[in-house]
Image (tube, rainbow over all chains, first blue to last red; front, top):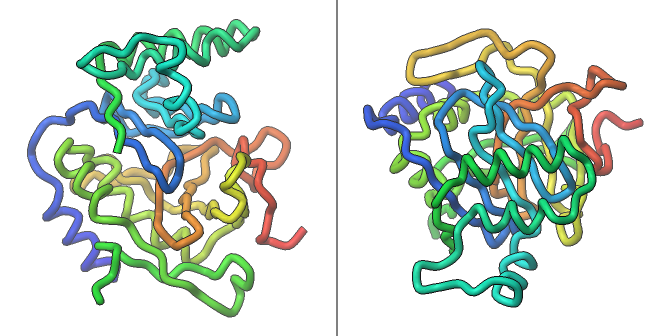
Amino acid sequence: MAADLKQMLEDEVGNGEFRPYCITSAEADALTAYFKGDADYSQRLTDHVTLFRSLDTNEIVGCRIKGISGILEDLPNFLHVDDHGTKLSMIFWSFRGGVDDDQLRNAFKQLAAAAGDMPLQTA
Amino acid sequence: MGSKWRIEFEARLPGNPKRDTWTVGIAPALLDTLRINSHTVKQMRIMLVEGVLNAPIAIFEGWSRPDMDDCFVYAGRPIQDYRGRGIETPPPPGMMFLVFVLSDGTIDDWNWRNVGEDDQDLPDGMNGRQLWPLT
């Protein structure tokens, strides 16, 4: 199995450059976003947010937002969402307001900056 | 009827890990997302998933949030890491590899995580119910 799997994965891996992406999973009720393709590790930030950090630089390269369905349902009540849809950074803004801890607030600020104009695509 | 997963593994059964296994897998949509966006590290680290599911150091039930009490986290210590095609490295020090599995067996995520400050044999930030080893 391992040899077959390795061959299959190596066949699937292309030569293209990493492209940032954002996906949601209804089954897991979670959103996953990656801004960079570095080798990463996960760090649980809050009950709702897990950061993905580069193993080499510790920079934030992605995140996972849990319980996303409730957040998305609430967003239109707080923000005007235009034809271009919701930006991922809005999600971090929504979390940032509720934290007192400077370290957490800074992490959300970094996440919003890393997300930039990345659109929030829902399944 | 075909499987709903493109890659399947036999994992230790959370309720009886010593004796039984169950089939889990990764959905085509997630694999397609990784391939289309050239997320090579994530793709190649699927190589680590099988070992952790077969020989977990710990299994947790619940993802520490509402409606996810029937999901599982498998934690293990692979002896290598993958950082790209053909790029094998030693595992990152002080970390464990986690595989997140939904109640229907769908593998939802996998990644490294620091071990806990209090218990070096368990991953950090894991609040689910520990099923294995029995405590």
